[in-house]
Every structure is written in structure tokens, then in C-alpha cells.
Length: 246
Image (cartoon, rainbow, N blue to C red; front, side):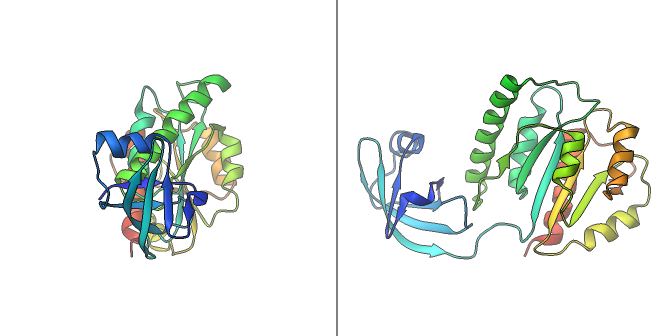
């Protein structure tokens, strides 16, 4: 079943009005017909609105609500991925897979060893691109919300953003106790907010690690092998998903 996102204002009693680029996709790409069923989410409450296509207008698709699936697919905790900017187009893969694995928000981080340097104009264009990828991944994985992709933040500002989160983790190559990592993951509970900090190629600088430890962020190991930046975050998200999934 195909899923689409709408603004809450487009859900009017038992009518759901789809607008924008999804209209062309439904009519001309998917070639759907009146009576066919689709799933709609408003990106806010996590609920899935099942509705049938009623009619096509020039720039809208009018649907009739059939029922609301109250039990959503969101993880019962909010995971924030603080991802240091990687080289090339790796961030696109990271955003896509992080959304599929249940990340609630993604915060690009400008760490000292990041090769990529974005000025304001380039950052806006990149974030718009990443947000589009997040929306497509949310549709594909039947998410109830579209995870927000933030504008890139300096490392210190990222730490401040995570200051009040319940669990804060930073994989660190010099951390060695895998049993400690397991115990930390096992303490994660439903309803918590979780920050995961992932370094760039080459990892975080020692000064950044010291800053993180001073802020109370928990260092963990991901095992004996050194993982690429695009692998490390997805590994932690997978562990957390396994821990939290109902």
C-alpha cells in the first residue's frame, strides 16, 4: 500500500485532500483509480489514516477516510542522530537509512576533522536535499512522521542541543569495554530521548572527545573493528531499534 504525507489542515472530517507533487505521482505515475486505498499520515501524531480515492481534480486528489490505525510504527523513544558531515554523498545514504531505522531527528555536525565545509547557501541547499530524502524514506518505510534534518551545527552547539536528553552516547575507538556498551544499551527505556554522536572520517579530535566527556556524554565501543562513519551510526541505531521495538 502506498503512503503519503499531508498537512494536518488537509484532513477535514472524513475528507482528505492531497495536493502538490503527490497528485501527479498518484495520477500519472502510479495510475491509481477511484476506490483504491492509500495510507496517509499528517507527520505529527504518528497515526495512519486509511482512505479511499474518491475523485481526481486538476490539482488535488480527494479521498474519503475509511478508518484510523491508532497503533503507529514509531519507536517508543526519540533518537537524535548527531552525524558529523561526511565526504561526498555519504550523508544521503545516512539520512535514508537512519529514517528507515527509526531516527526521530538528524543533526549534521561540523566537527573539526570534517573535510566538507558548507557556507550558509550551500548548507541550505544540502539540507533541503537531505530533507527530501528523509521524506521519501519515511514514505517507503511507512513512518508516521517525517524526521527533521537540521541545519549543520558546530560540535559545541550540538552538545548544547543534546544537553537535556536522557541518554547521550558517543562511539569512541579507544573505548574498549563491550560489556559496558551492552549495559548502556540495555538501560535505554521507552519514552526517553537519546542522542547518538558519530564522528567524521578520522573520528572526533581529542579536544572534542574531552568536551563530550566533560558534558557527561557516555563513550561506548562498537567492537574491535573500526567502522566507517556511514556504518557507525546505523550500527547504534540498529542496536537501539532492537532494544526499543515493541
